[in-house]
Image 1: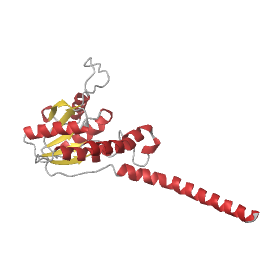
Image 2: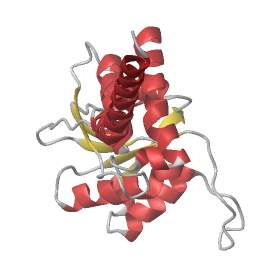
Image 3: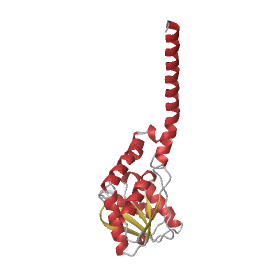
Image 4: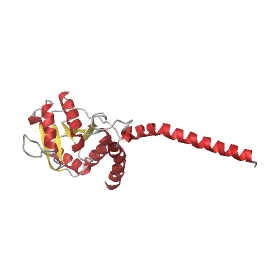
Length: 215
């Protein structure tokens, strides 16, 4: 092959490489959006006996707000909270560091949920599956046959799987709902641009594989 042919071949390879790079960069945001959206599920449950807010210190505000909205719509007569043992910052009025479940209960009351309509499930929720078992046992003991889980959007697929797995054979029907991402969590289109996004989206896939393998 002469020098002209070699040059043309190299030029063709460069063009192909540039096209591949452009396609990859153009497709990456779409793939990232699809990866985020795949984590979000919603499952209806008719006339739930209670709304259950899963523990989540970094997103308790959005979860409490969404649960209060659902309660205000008359979706359920009761809101249940779990306790993961974590505490928040110093509260000067109470002169202590309140637990996140206490802060969640306070926000619910501020948004119109009566205090006597909020209950805390006994026991320490050390992980999502352990939390699911606590919820199942409490629901069984109090004859709650239908529960609606409120969690953060990117956790919804794993949380629904965990709750349904824990409730197998119990007769408890489980639904799930969540606030749209973009409140205390990044949007599906831009999560990859934030370190927090890699934790809540990228890390969620790691957690799902772990849960499916262990439980």
